[in-house]
Length: 298
Image (cartoon, rainbow, N blue to C red; front, side, top):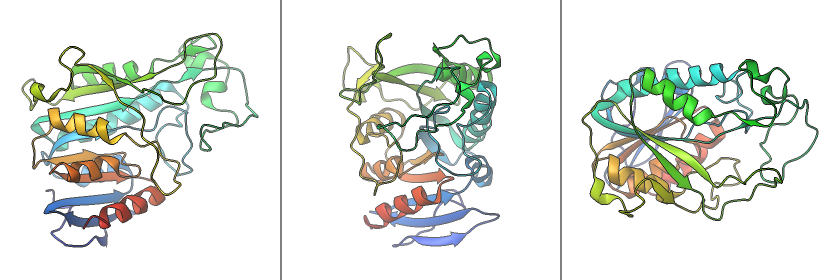
């Protein structure tokens, strides 16, 4: 494990790192874990090169939630700004990934409305940001989009990562079976998101025999998971989604990294499956919840 990731301890031990980064370390069933509260970019810069085997993460989507944390990803004024922010973080993530390491990046899309300030409410999420968002302003986000257009955020990010040196190996479709419906009348409701499989090099760890469906290998039908996160407005992975990524992309006993760990699902599942885990998040409430959950396992 990297020097800033975890110490061998039977209990979670809070420590103060450089700057404003708060770190908790612990062990569970012999596997180490660490939760870092701070900027993903800055924390990643402190980790050793080649220290993790697999990355499983889902960054905040472009202008879909406001987590009320200064410096959060997802509220950039432009699409280019959002893509550039993720590009910088993923470049550091690639550095800390081992040569045969694999990353799984879950991204959802956003629509450009261009209709001005919204005054409504959203029953699906109290963290949906209302007011004048970048996607509500006129001008097509500076890239000529027409109103009501799907922006194509996932592929804009994926192609930028490929141009930056990542090997883009697969665009897995996560079919969100029985997810919350969209109330729209002039287009099909969305029922899927992308999980991009990326590798640091052309040769990497991959166990094809662990794929559960040999016919639809890149179509994963997984139900969204009810939130068990203490009332926090996170958007957690289903456990099964993380398990599937780890089965095919991370050796047992390896180290899993999530730079946007939220309520801690990816680290918890890593421990459940015989791996160590490192989580990073800017939101202190999310980190403290993740730490409580992990401490309860010790």
